[in-house]
Image (spheres, rainbow, N blue to C red):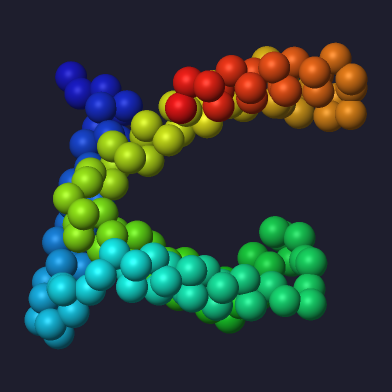
Length: 143
Protein backbone atom coordinates (compact mmCIF):
# COMPACT_ATOMS: atom_id res chain seq x y z
CA UNK A 1 0.00 0.00 0.00
CA UNK A 2 1.29 3.48 -0.93
CA UNK A 3 1.41 5.98 1.90
CA UNK A 4 -0.22 9.38 1.53
CA UNK A 5 3.15 11.04 2.13
CA UNK A 6 4.88 9.13 -0.67
CA UNK A 7 1.88 9.65 -2.97
CA UNK A 8 1.94 13.40 -2.27
CA UNK A 9 5.67 13.58 -2.94
CA UNK A 10 5.25 11.68 -6.19
CA UNK A 11 2.36 13.93 -7.24
CA UNK A 12 4.35 17.08 -6.46
CA UNK A 13 7.42 15.83 -8.31
CA UNK A 14 5.35 14.88 -11.37
CA UNK A 15 3.44 18.18 -11.25
CA UNK A 16 6.64 20.20 -10.98
CA UNK A 17 8.16 18.26 -13.86
CA UNK A 18 5.05 18.79 -15.99
CA UNK A 19 5.05 22.53 -15.31
CA UNK A 20 8.76 22.75 -16.05
CA UNK A 21 8.32 20.93 -19.37
CA UNK A 22 5.43 23.21 -20.37
CA UNK A 23 7.52 26.29 -19.63
CA UNK A 24 10.46 24.84 -21.55
CA UNK A 25 8.23 24.22 -24.58
CA UNK A 26 6.74 27.72 -24.32
CA UNK A 27 10.10 29.53 -24.25
CA UNK A 28 11.72 27.33 -26.90
CA UNK A 29 8.82 27.85 -29.33
CA UNK A 30 9.32 31.60 -29.02
CA UNK A 31 13.11 31.55 -29.14
CA UNK A 32 13.40 32.87 -25.62
CA UNK A 33 15.55 30.02 -24.35
CA UNK A 34 18.82 31.94 -24.71
CA UNK A 35 18.27 34.57 -22.03
CA UNK A 36 21.04 35.46 -19.63
CA UNK A 37 20.50 34.45 -16.00
CA UNK A 38 20.51 38.17 -15.14
CA UNK A 39 17.62 38.71 -17.59
CA UNK A 40 15.61 36.01 -15.84
CA UNK A 41 16.48 37.40 -12.39
CA UNK A 42 15.35 40.86 -13.49
CA UNK A 43 12.10 39.40 -14.80
CA UNK A 44 11.48 37.61 -11.49
CA UNK A 45 11.94 40.91 -9.67
CA UNK A 46 9.73 42.84 -12.09
CA UNK A 47 6.92 40.29 -11.80
CA UNK A 48 7.27 40.21 -8.00
CA UNK A 49 6.88 43.97 -7.98
CA UNK A 50 3.75 43.69 -10.11
CA UNK A 51 2.41 41.33 -7.43
CA UNK A 52 3.36 43.82 -4.74
CA UNK A 53 1.63 46.60 -6.65
CA UNK A 54 -1.69 44.78 -6.19
CA UNK A 55 -1.35 45.46 -2.45
CA UNK A 56 -0.25 49.07 -2.73
CA UNK A 57 -2.21 51.40 -0.43
CA UNK A 58 -4.14 48.60 1.23
CA UNK A 59 -3.58 46.21 4.08
CA UNK A 60 -6.52 43.83 3.97
CA UNK A 61 -6.71 40.56 5.84
CA UNK A 62 -6.58 37.22 4.07
CA UNK A 63 -10.32 36.74 4.62
CA UNK A 64 -11.18 40.08 3.01
CA UNK A 65 -8.98 39.39 -0.01
CA UNK A 66 -10.34 35.85 -0.48
CA UNK A 67 -13.87 37.26 -0.78
CA UNK A 68 -12.75 39.43 -3.73
CA UNK A 69 -12.57 36.84 -6.53
CA UNK A 70 -11.26 39.40 -9.05
CA UNK A 71 -8.41 40.36 -6.70
CA UNK A 72 -7.54 36.71 -6.08
CA UNK A 73 -7.42 36.10 -9.84
CA UNK A 74 -5.09 39.10 -10.36
CA UNK A 75 -2.86 37.85 -7.53
CA UNK A 76 -2.77 34.32 -8.95
CA UNK A 77 -1.71 35.66 -12.36
CA UNK A 78 1.20 37.61 -10.88
CA UNK A 79 2.28 34.70 -8.67
CA UNK A 80 2.20 32.50 -11.79
CA UNK A 81 4.43 34.98 -13.64
CA UNK A 82 6.96 34.88 -10.80
CA UNK A 83 6.87 31.09 -10.70
CA UNK A 84 7.29 30.75 -14.47
CA UNK A 85 10.50 32.77 -14.35
CA UNK A 86 11.70 30.84 -11.29
CA UNK A 87 11.14 27.54 -13.08
CA UNK A 88 12.90 28.96 -16.13
CA UNK A 89 15.90 29.97 -14.01
CA UNK A 90 16.13 26.44 -12.60
CA UNK A 91 15.91 24.88 -16.06
CA UNK A 92 18.32 27.42 -17.53
CA UNK A 93 20.97 26.71 -14.89
CA UNK A 94 20.25 22.96 -14.63
CA UNK A 95 19.23 22.73 -10.99
CA UNK A 96 16.36 20.75 -9.54
CA UNK A 97 13.69 23.20 -8.34
CA UNK A 98 12.05 20.68 -6.00
CA UNK A 99 15.40 19.79 -4.42
CA UNK A 100 16.33 23.48 -4.05
CA UNK A 101 13.03 24.28 -2.32
CA UNK A 102 13.24 21.29 0.02
CA UNK A 103 16.87 22.05 0.91
CA UNK A 104 15.99 25.68 1.62
CA UNK A 105 13.11 24.57 3.86
CA UNK A 106 15.51 22.34 5.81
CA UNK A 107 17.85 25.32 6.34
CA UNK A 108 14.91 27.51 7.37
CA UNK A 109 13.79 24.90 9.91
CA UNK A 110 17.21 25.17 11.54
CA UNK A 111 17.19 28.96 11.42
CA UNK A 112 13.62 29.24 12.74
CA UNK A 113 13.17 26.25 15.09
CA UNK A 114 9.66 25.41 16.24
CA UNK A 115 10.74 25.58 19.89
CA UNK A 116 11.00 29.37 19.63
CA UNK A 117 8.86 30.10 16.57
CA UNK A 118 5.34 29.03 17.27
CA UNK A 119 2.17 30.77 18.33
CA UNK A 120 2.69 29.89 22.01
CA UNK A 121 6.08 31.60 22.41
CA UNK A 122 6.01 35.34 23.21
CA UNK A 123 7.87 37.28 20.50
CA UNK A 124 9.16 40.08 22.72
CA UNK A 125 10.54 37.86 25.46
CA UNK A 126 14.22 38.71 26.06
CA UNK A 127 15.20 35.07 26.60
CA UNK A 128 13.51 34.07 23.33
CA UNK A 129 15.26 36.86 21.42
CA UNK A 130 18.67 35.92 22.86
CA UNK A 131 18.12 32.27 21.94
CA UNK A 132 17.14 33.24 18.40
CA UNK A 133 20.22 35.46 17.97
CA UNK A 134 22.42 32.57 19.11
CA UNK A 135 20.74 30.18 16.65
CA UNK A 136 20.93 32.77 13.86
CA UNK A 137 24.66 33.28 14.47
CA UNK A 138 25.30 29.51 14.37
CA UNK A 139 23.16 29.19 11.25
CA UNK A 140 25.15 31.87 9.41
CA UNK A 141 28.43 30.15 10.30
CA UNK A 142 27.17 26.87 8.83
CA UNK A 143 26.21 28.36 5.45
